[in-house]
Length: 208
Ligand code: AMP
Image 1 (cartoon, helix red, strand yellow):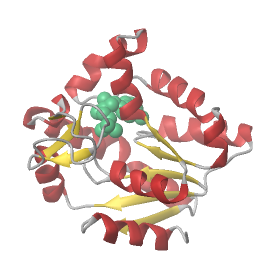
Image 2: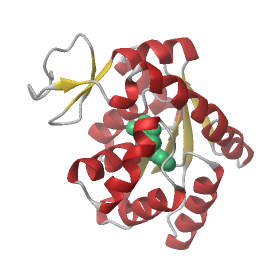
Image 3: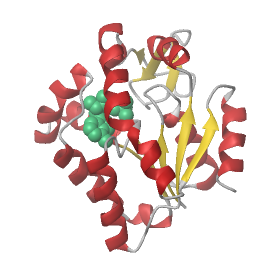
């Protein structure tokens, strides 16, 4: 099954994806994770992307599109994938449709994880990530509960950047809800609840 996850930063797309991957083995394609890895490695792409990411702005389309195209062509993506954080605007969505059409591997669903803006701000401010394994936890996790690694706060989860990321989401990404609704491919789940509750809703919505 090929799925696009939609939702504001902090809606829980990464966690929803991790649960689906654990149960069904889909390939998890997170452009945020791919870009953070590029920044860490100091590659050309990482150097170009860093200033946009630090400011909470979108990285230029062509850089992200090239990254996603390469990842979609990998073997594991042929058995089903979850796109998390891509597309982020209409240009990316249209490009994705035409790429997947050309590959004969179209999308099955776009799933919106719906969470109120107030909850999003609280979640992003408290979010911490594991430097070693990428696990997403909260400020209450002194070390990573999965691997014991060091937990840190993403630079773009600091208050000054959060507001800009939410603006960028409203302006660029939220119109995609109507884009996919218009294609009859949109499913919506309430993203407030425990990981298990949200996972059960996701499976029901996707008929998994
Ligand atoms: P995320 O982890 O999905 O919140 O992404 C972190 C940051 O990476 C975003 O604030 C953007 O700067 C950049 N980014 C991730 N995905 C995309 C995308 N599809 N298009 C442009 N920039 C992106």
